[in-house]
Length: 209
Image 1 (cartoon, rainbow, N blue to C red):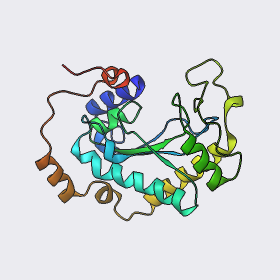
Image 2: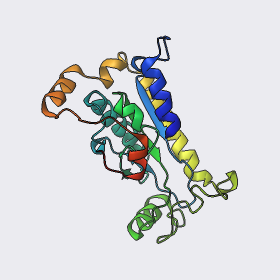
Image 3: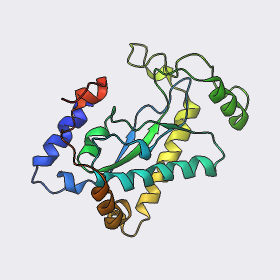
């Protein structure tokens, strides 16, 4: 997150074509793809943080729908995960860049409902274990390649490939991600922010003064 914050800060002042903020169309954030006790989490664009600029919101919602389309089309379970700014997409949203992505789980506990739903849709044994963390090695020394659920990783990669290909098939990707009329209406409805995005505040849930 600190690295993403620095990257966007540099992009804001860059004059090099391809490295300026305005040269970015979308940020695809893949924050864990193979958690051992996985979920198929999709960032929910509707829960974008208050630090997200209005320009980023329509495209972020469309990214959510793209990923949903793949999981629904393949009859796989999926869950919304909060788009709360606590990962590398946060600085991009705050700079007005649309974002979206996937999340296979970290320190949250898998619920009984999730286990049962995943077992039903994927087959017995694929639902994991309820009541334990989705990734017990999250930010721990045991977080190694041997700790990856290869089935989850494979499906998450396929979903990402679908989303990227779908973006590539758009005849006017900029207009698709940044519909001028919708953004203008959001800007009319949304009060102007009185603070700037801060990665430390977002990650640790600290208040803005």
